[in-house]
Length: 350
Ligand code: TXA
Ligand code: MG
Image (cartoon, rainbow, N blue to C red; front, side, top):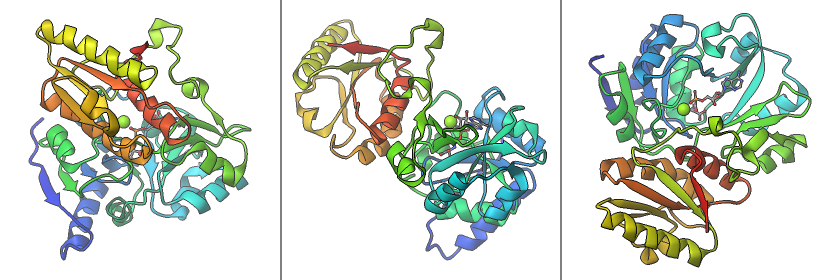
């Protein structure tokens, strides 16, 4: 694949703002690919009604076309065109959280192409809040399928330069709009069951949802995130840097001691060691590359830095990575969900 990719740095007060948005909208409408920032992570967009365009997404990402995609919209009339049974709870959530980082799963109408849903009877829909994303979708005039704008298996991009690294030459246009604020993908909430269920945790947290509609559940393993899956077949990697990650769980002192002693052993084996640490423990960690992920008291900061840090370790070519854990409630559940996937479930309790 070697396309000429147009790369544009864009801020909202750019005098060319609307011109760039319209160009991106036109490319999408006509079946091309545009990568753009959203408030969660960068997305790689294509016309959700155009099967050929969707196929290009899979080709650009190098991923098999089995995972269903989120339909991104900018108005509620579009929602009515593609989904059935928008129940009362869904309406309340839409009123509260859209536009924003909450994806809702509905029963689909026949008008939704199978290529979006992977043949499921349901469809995922989200209305992004980031002005660039929102305006591009509106300008395109069609719903936009947009998975994260990374090469398959890599951490989702949260900065324009991550997208350029992965997709330059593979898409028609990349819009670099700076930092994606939240840094983790949207919360995915299935509204089709009796009790709505969180399939992917994100920055719209369980209690935020429950304060609007009452009880929701977490899908299977999400609550007890540090449990190693019983079946080894359930171990898989995602969002992963090149080097293996091990998450070390325990009291502050024990974790620091363990990581430092392992680090010394690894270094004597000629390995370059990376460490993910909260800011207050950086000075106690002994590795080749010790990166602060932010303050333990500010999970938003940790969420926003996680993918950036995972990519950083690729740039500096470490051989092994140790991370402390970030277990907790709410946003911490989303952080641990991504970190554990990146680590392929390698968790060490000390
Ligand atoms: O924040 C986000 O949601 C980003 C930005 C770009 O908007 N997009 C994103 O898309 O994360 P993607 O394709 O990487 O993730 C879509 C998620 C997957 O976990 C997929 O399994 C789930 O949504 N999903 C999509 N349709 C579904 C359906 N009908 N039922 C259950 N899960 C579905
Ligand atoms: Mg993704």
